[in-house]
Structures are given as C-alpha cells and as structure tokens.
View 1 (cartoon, rainbow, N blue to C red):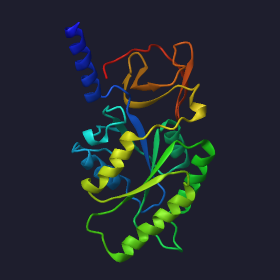
View 2 (cartoon, helix red, strand yellow; view 1 turned 30 degrees about the horizontal axis):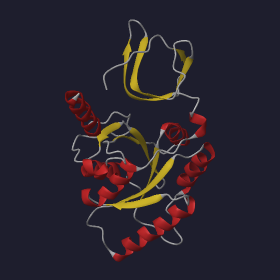
View 3 (spheres, rainbow, N blue to C red; view 1 turned 90 degrees about the vertical axis):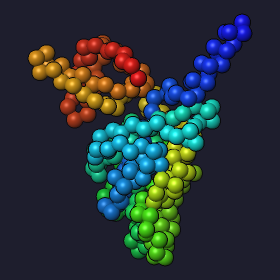
View 4 (tube, helix red, strand yellow; view 1 turned 90 degrees about the horizontal axis):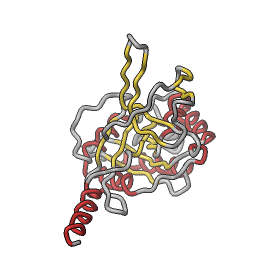
Length: 252
C-alpha cells in the first residue's frame, strides 16, 4: 500500500511537471500596419527562454516556464499563429484560436487611432463571427522610452479598451522581463468557450505530408471537438471538402 501511494504521488508530480493538455492556440493579429507581429512574438519567446528560429506565418510551439503554471500547478503550452492581415485569414484563425492577441504599435494620438482602416475592417469581421479571449499587446524596442512614446501607449490602451471593454487586458512588452506578466496571464487564464464550436471538430495543422503516388495528404495536429470520423467529409480551408481515409493517433 505504501508503495502504491508513492507511485500515485510520483505520477501526480510528473503530471504537474509535464503538460498533458493540448496547447492553447494564440492568434497574433495586427490591427495597424505599423504593428510588428514578429517583434511581439520574438519578445514573448525570449520571455519563455525559447531561442529557436521562428518562421513567418508558421505555427510555433512553446512550453511556458514554471512561473506561468495554471491554477492546478500544471505547465501550459502555447501555439503562436501570426496571421496575415486579410479578412479571410483573420476569420479562419479566430475560428480556431483560444486567445486573440491584438498587436498594436506604441504610437497613437487623439486624432490617429490605434486601428488603421484595415484594422477596423478586421475588428468588425471578428466581432460578427464571435470572439474568444482577447489580450492586447504593445510591442516596442526597449530603448524607446521618450515622453511622446509613453503618451502614445496611453492612447493605444484607450482605443483598445473602448473596442474590447469586457475585462480585456493589454500589456506593453519591450524585453523578456516586461513580457513575464503577459506570459503568466496566458498560462493561467481559462479559455472562454465559443458556443458554435461545440458541435464542430477542428484541427490546426502543425505539419502536412503529401504522397504523390497514392495522392493522399497527411495532416498532423491536435484534434479539438467532436465529429472527426471517416464517415464524414472534412473541409480544408481554401481547398474544399474531402473524404478521410484514416485517422491515427501519434505520440505527443
């Protein structure tokens, strides 16, 4: 009995140290042409002590540090998606995102909004479709500390809270230290359910492989929701509906 108790205790400790839940999908969306998504992502990855190369418009996985564990003491994982500034691209990304990370430049004035014309169009589209959790982020170089830039960040925050008033939080990040509060918030927050997803299974592709001989496409990723069977057609964005040939489980 004592041995079994020790084994259970070790298993519980291991479960806390090693994440078992799928990564939270974080969609980085630029609401102004001057907002630097790549800078925001690089600063956040530095805050997670992840120095691996990042590729534009490619999913990037990261395990969050110990200080960003959830309320149960479990480590969390994120998948960052940097999204192209198109209506279709943003709508497709927000369909599968657990968190929208609204990225802004540090400059704004009373006359010049933190949202440009395209940004407002994207905002209207995603509000109509339905929003998950939203975090705002102002990414800037750590040497940018002038009074005008500080004032600009205040205006950005004002514009952000006027468009996302429901307890949405905005962070200013310029280096790995300033990014830690945001990383902690991403790890500890509870994902807000989006009702129309409940009966619609979906998958964000981490990698794909195509076999020209058999004309089969292999898609790998985390399945969320129900409905994936070989008896149902699946839709691949931008390509149409297809019949599944096989579903297989692979190691995480």
